[in-house]
Every structure is written in C-alpha cells, then in structure tokens.
Image (cartoon, rainbow, N blue to C red; front, side, top):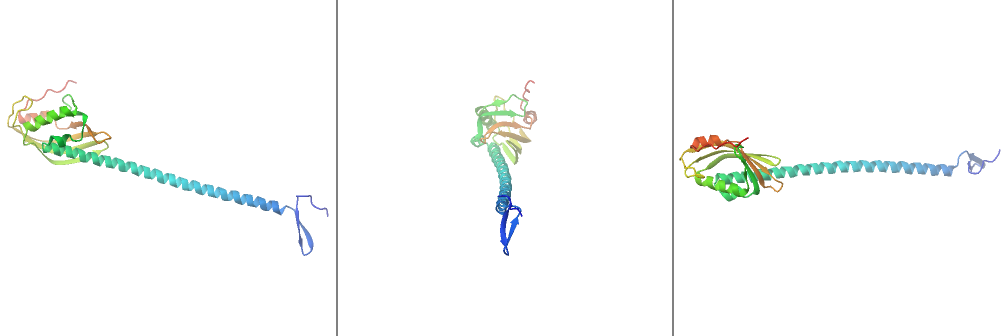
Length: 216
C-alpha cells in the first residue's frame, strides 16, 4: 500500500496496526473550532442586536412618555394661570388679573371690534370697567385646556353704577354666561384673549349704546 501524500491524511496505531485516516485530524479540528467560534460570534451579535432593539424601543417609549408628561404639565399650568386671571377679574383685582399677561397681549373680545393691543391698553379698560361696575361678580367658574389654549366658562353679573368711558351710568344690571379663551406662549404667559358673549347682548341689558361693529 502506498503511503499517503504529506498533509493528505493522518495515521495512528491501533493494537499495533498502523491506521490511516483519509483526512487530517488536526486541520479538521481547527476547522471545527473556527466554525464553533463563528457560530458563537453570530449568536452573540444577534443577542446584542436584540438587546439594542429592546433598549432603543424602551428609550423611545420613555421619551414619548416624557413628552406627554411635559405637555400635560404645561396644560395644567396654563389652566391654573387662566383660572387665577379670571378669578382676579371676578374680584376686581387688577394686579392678579394681569399678573401672567404678556406685555404684547392682543385682546380680540367677541371679534366685533378692532383688537386692543398691549397689556397697558387692557389695564386701562379693566380699571374703567371695575369702576363702572363696582359689584361685578363671576360665578360657576370652570376651565378646560387643550395645548396652548384654555377655555374658562363663567356666569357674570353687575350693575352699571358709575360712568364708563364718557358714557353715563344707567344703574341697570346685566347677567350673562360667557367663555373666555386664552392663548399661551411657551413661557406660560397669556398672549391672546377672546370672549364668546357678544358686546351687543350685554350692552342692551344695561342700556349702553351698542358699539359699531368693525368694518369687514
């Protein structure tokens, strides 16, 4: 029998007989070790990827929950600010009413008149209103928030006892339900205000001249 070529086979003794193996054991073991190593590496890689995916998903969920909590916190802050302002108005407390109003406030009212711009202009109007209606009262005040908007519902009443902006008092009373709509900036300041109740309805109740609507 011819001897195998070098590197083509390996041999060992068994019961005194020389046995040839038709493949190199050492090389085969080396190949098996390489295969095992690669398989282990692939398994570890997949495991890491799964952990990374879980970690990424967890991080994303945490970020979403954090953003939702931030929005809810802002809405609650804005709602409390709007309520404080309306309650201040109901108590004829000018400073509390304007405490969180931005200097560049835009007052739209019911939309029938030209907007009043600036906090100072709103201050002058409120001061005149408090003087004209010293028994002004707000009740059943509730609020709801959505994003940067807050709506405050209330019932209002008062008697026109003192002159208002050059108009003579009539000593007549009014009672209306209204919704005040506030818009906030990111800093939590009121930048816009609107009202649902029409000026015409209130004016007719107290005998005040009905203001001319703005031109379209």
